[in-house]
Length: 343
Ligand code: KG4
Ligand code: ZN
Image 1 (cartoon, rainbow, N blue to C red):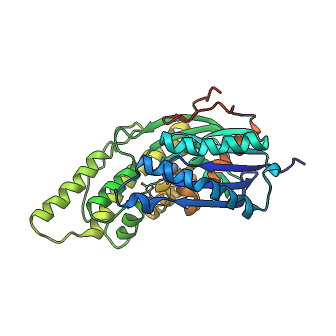
Image 2: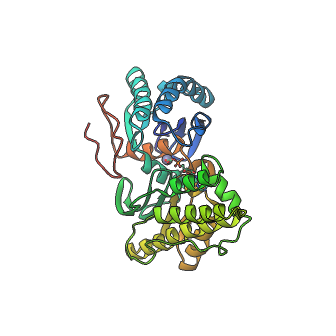
Image 3: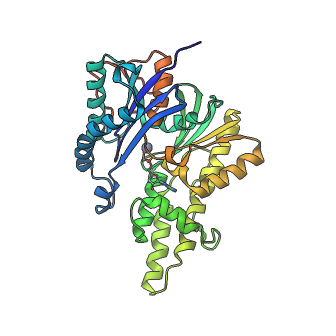
């Protein structure tokens, strides 16, 4: 029988400092996520300089904590997996620096993981039965894409947003409605009390037959609607606005994801990224994949937003494939999914 593989994952691509120890991609031994959201909140979004500084402050205590909780010594690990991109360069640099130190001092192999790949692998953690080929809908604060995953580490980008990412649209609309940052969870909650059909917002690129998205028109439509009511000093139907916005977003996401599964003749769909936590997206995806006879997977809610478990899980498959990175590796802020890292 094969020996167990213990991977330490480190994630610092944006505003979460996270570390986790995971066995064989499926057993979470320990996990710590320190969110910096309160430091960025007053600016209405992530401030890169603050993010880097906070990562630097948090990394050592978090690594000590995650190893203590795991009850393991570094020497008992098999490898260190770290996010090398995409993300904020200064933020990525902090996590990569910490991973290099652990790798060098403890003699552990260093494995570079693509953040988006990590989001996809969040699905594998609790579902050992899950196997590619599959269609992944990645919806986060920075990305919106439909990916055909042929095998482990093999990706084909089928389409993506031409302007705003879905999470970004949620955050901007929420900010405009005065609901705070991050906007996704608040709009999700507000929308539960609203009628998704009360206000019809545009569904851009719904029938273009490709797999690209455009969110900026929808965002502007919501802003115009709100300004119009404000000018007339009328009360804002917050619940219906949130529900109508969300319905417009989700209609397009669902329809294009199902079309992608049909095009590739694939029976498995996974949701990935922070917006995969959205209750309405999940509900509609469950209904529609059921109708089409497709298998649907989505990560546990705590695994949708940034964490290091997903990085350790993706790192496990790279470890098995023999992927190693040298200590000279640099972060790649615009790293593409499937892009080979030459180190
Ligand atoms: O994946 P993530 O943690 O960070 C990036 O890699 O971008 O995603 C963060 C995004 C934010 O835009 C946040 O508003 C959104 O995910 N989000 C949600 C929900 N929870 C988080 N959007 C909609 N509904 C939610 N429940
Ligand atoms: Zn993310």
